[in-house]
Image 1 (cartoon, helix red, strand yellow):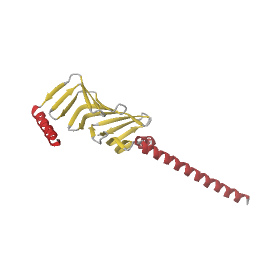
Image 2 (cartoon, one colour):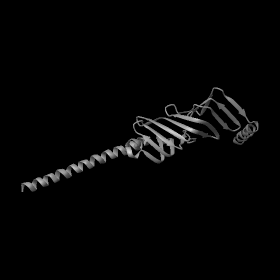
Image 3 (spheres, helix red, strand yellow):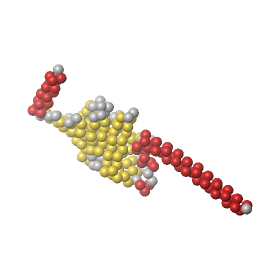
Image 4 (cartoon, one colour):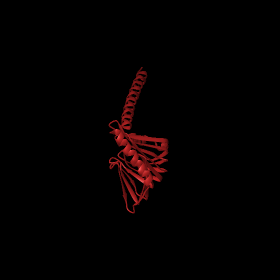
Length: 209
């Protein structure tokens, strides 16, 4: 009888512990899911070492219900110890407060994380930035979230609406929508295109009253 009682007692303890372990695991998973919802990049920290390759990469940042940026890639490799992700064929979209987007593409991107947040992103190879009919081209670009700034550290050109600008370095203020060209700046204008643009602008003003 004593033996049977011990077995029953052990079974009760075992199942009780199993229930507690399940509840703890469930609570941890719920907490992790909430963290990932707030910060999508956090999901990378929960990947096991054998699953650091991601196909069809996609991450986004949302603030107060507004999408700030999105990042797509054909594939990504995440280096957990370095807090760094390398993304192939990245497509980066920055959204201003009115919902307009600036698109940046390249051959490769390196994403650096600091305390689960995007600290910096470096894009390399065939950089092309498109916004409001203008196109910026260079060999590399750096996105700084803390400054809301896109930096093209190498020779860069800006094309669009009859204007071609070239400089040794270019800085784009994403919030203020300003472009600065630094050092060895060259300008090329196409009068016919500029005249047509001014004509259309005056026509819109006349119609608008």
